[in-house]
Length: 274
Ligand SMILES: [Zn+2]
Image (cartoon, rainbow, N blue to C red; front, side, top):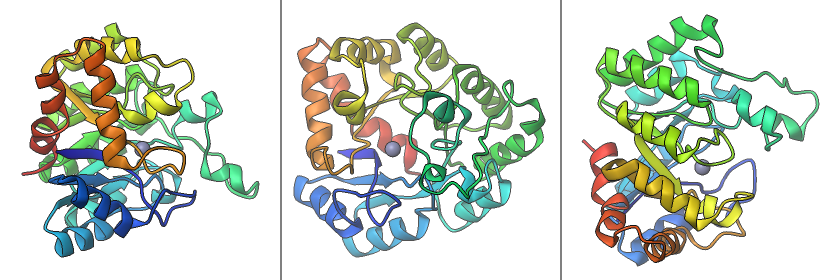
């Protein structure tokens, strides 16, 4: 199996374990690899160190939040040149996050800027820098993940990604509170070429989330479904177990087991690995 979204310490919030603990949980569960995500720092070096000492396929990247300078081509270029495989569009500092009142780094210190980030069509002035980020992702045949950006921004990104020849686009948990898309909207974006992420985090922590809704999204995603834990919170199960619980719940709600197994193994491995 391959978990395409997990968090580990050190981080700006408490995590269930540090890199080594998370690595060992996947080794013990017999996983092939995972994607280490951080909202506020590049995980490229940490992932490379974990891969080297374990032999697992551990993938890192950079999220374009305030600590990266927002939608900053230099941050993407550095992460990709160093071997990063994924660039996440703004997540915790996306405009959607602020509007939804979800946690941000700047909540911790009033001296920090509350600047938020967006791409076209929400922020037309961001077109030039965003397109440069997309060109860099295309150059490296890396993964573009949509972060917490809104549905219209995801649609714009998918269209521009196709223009620049990006082959790997992951819609980051589109049915989570941010961006909060419906199964119908998710199906439209999948048709534009996006893979569709559903996370165990949604199951455990998303207000108003039901297994039925997640199963509907899974059906809307078709063979572009990707299941990930997005675990690492102290009050979530260990990441491999969280992902297994998500699979079990979706299977109990009628999603074919073979589809679910592929969505937590071959599909994300193909998406993230060369
Ligand atoms: Zn996450």
